[in-house]
Image 1 (cartoon, rainbow, N blue to C red):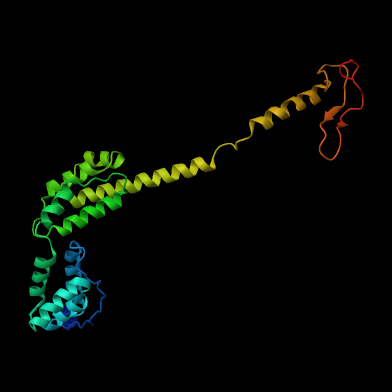
Image 2 (image 1 turned 90 degrees about the vertical axis):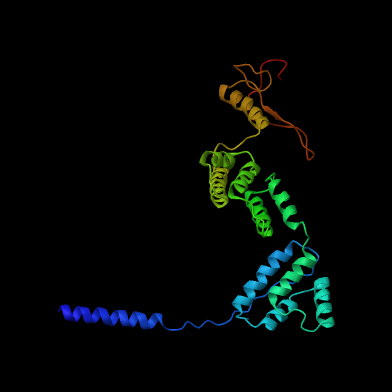
Length: 269
């Protein structure tokens, strides 16, 4: 029995090893990348990253093929600049890395990192939603390539920029150590606050008495009291009655309704 168990274990291990040794073949994935026209320099950083992802997904490893793929996703003055380089010197862009350096030196401002860092330090939530505020901070952080800020600075800027309210209170209570932790705490608290506010508004809208016109209540009260007490509609006294006079309309004169017995008082008859 023991020998059989050992042989079964060895067979299972051999099968697992042979399965793991099989080469994994993946098909290339074609991705669409937006064109970079050179008008907005800040978008160059994100465009470069999208090109790198597309090259990896499409399994494009040849240097000239990578350059051709990047050239096909240029537009406007950026494409005119690149084609001028290629026309003047065929094969000017020898590799994608060299082309990336040329694009950065031409279209990316020299003080781009300083400008993004300055905007990041002064960024506030204001009247925007927390999601929009976090998205702007992430974009500014991604644009500061080569000169990242420390975690303490990013956490301080984020906590000071959050609008006064439950989210800010929760952040100062928890005291997060990293920027991602602070964002996670803030997003969770914001979701809880919005869920409670939406539930409270729904309950207040569905519960409670239905409002009524005060004039209708006041006009209906005297008639009900007079009819119940048997008082005269004319002088509001007891022991005699008078028909209730109803004002006429455009179709006819005044008419009477109610008890037929007339009032004994002279002012009521």
